[in-house]
Length: 491
Image (tube, rainbow, N blue to C red; front, side, top):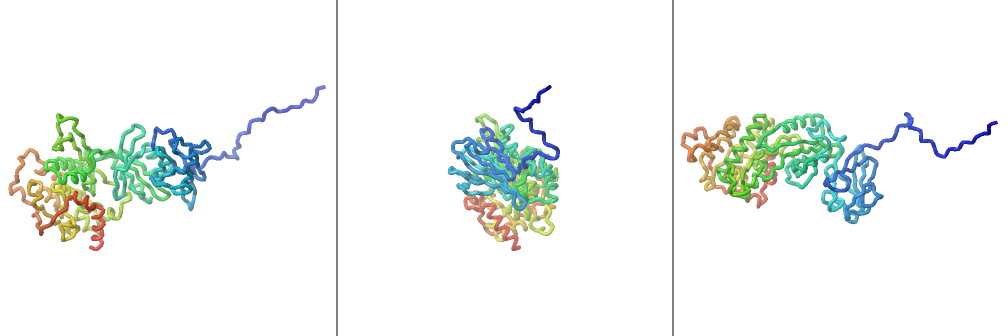
């Protein structure tokens, strides 16, 4: 007879698999991420931030995010995401006596602050991250042609410049180390037609390819917060600064130098106009210079440049997106800088339409400024006001500033600064003007060559202010724009 056998298990059976009625809990999706600004750093390259999760950051191994720099505190800060009134709110609480900095400003121990997309977070002297919303929260239909996030592909650097509706920063492509520039537009509220309009404009920008136009590499459209988007436009980085700075540093430009620069400007503008694109805001600040230096005195210069320069290339910048992204009231209503704006932009207030001829007026002002060092229209040349001077086409070639300038230059300017836009020279004709003709002898034109040229306007004695003096006395475009806008409101 068999005895009863007692069975005992020495180990537990493996846990049964989840049944279909018990779905496995998944973590909440990441709302935003912190990206390391130093790709060679030992710390984490990306820190994901999720709803209802608070991350503690510091040197201690008990932290969720461990940082190694010696000046990082044991428990440095807490970063979390709260969902409030239908919005994701990202906050940072500073726990460190060494300090946590947001955009260079100290938060302060036990203080809490809100952080937004694009904010730079500094945990230590050499430990910097930048916040951005995840790609899943971006407006995917508006992305052209970059994939992922801007911060996935680029490390952002120092500020290069600021404008009315954007700031420009240096950036480095992570994959190649190539130095570029990125224009970061002010946040813009989304609406039904916004993405379609922006896509169309971005597509045009990506197709533009001309040696005298700043090249656009790629774009990213990403959320700034729950209601607004920010556009990142990655551009060719130009090393020689603005034409404005060249004029200010020299006082004015030489005639042959101006001719060489304006010839290149005409070439780029002719290309844009052939695509039915008007720049609408041509000014010295939007004309960049790519300068190649001479390595020795034996290097043959390509043009009438300064002694140390081998070549100077004109690069037209800053056009196209202003009407879609973060433009200020001034840009919305006038779309141009006061001293360079065409008269038809000022008078057609009810049905304002921009055509390519507005650029040619601006070219006339540019040539004038380059050759004498001050603009043809300004408040100090009044009365009347600068606005009225432009509307009436009132300007003059003042002595002694214009005494040594070729008559052909005055003729070209007079054919560009024509109030009637239909009679203004188009770019194709302006680029063939006798002033650009290097083959002909440089001498005064015959009287017959001036048929059809408008009479030079003469007024009482005025004392123009040079661009260099304007910079020293803070009479910049912003000051003029405020005075100008007030004048427009009163008109």
